[in-house]
Image (cartoon, rainbow, N blue to C red; front, side, top):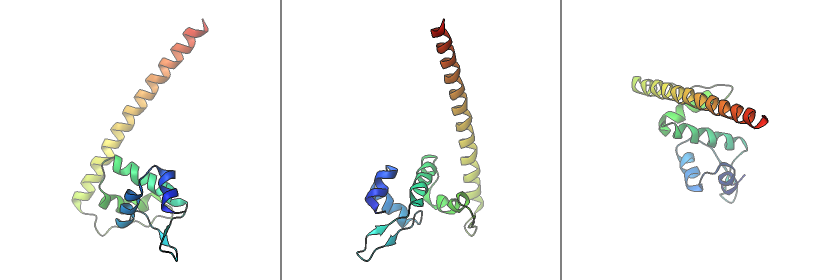
Length: 122
């Protein structure tokens, strides 16, 4: 698919997609006309990248952990500094706290919906 379609399917601007490619986060082949061509798996990759960026991870770390999201896994270690490991641990813990909060909120909404439905049956 061309960059315009990838942009539409992911809700990501063409400019950001080009940046992701520059950073090595996504890969495009080039047609004879020089246009970028992305395979369908790139949609999921862009969504993963956006989620990791939204979680606060910098692109240099995202580039290193992306292989962990694929199978088979080809994990890249050369730049795994103590600082990077500490950053990842902090981000993982922050995500866990966020996930716990989301689960509590989901459960509260479910409880509210159950009560509203029960009230409306009476």
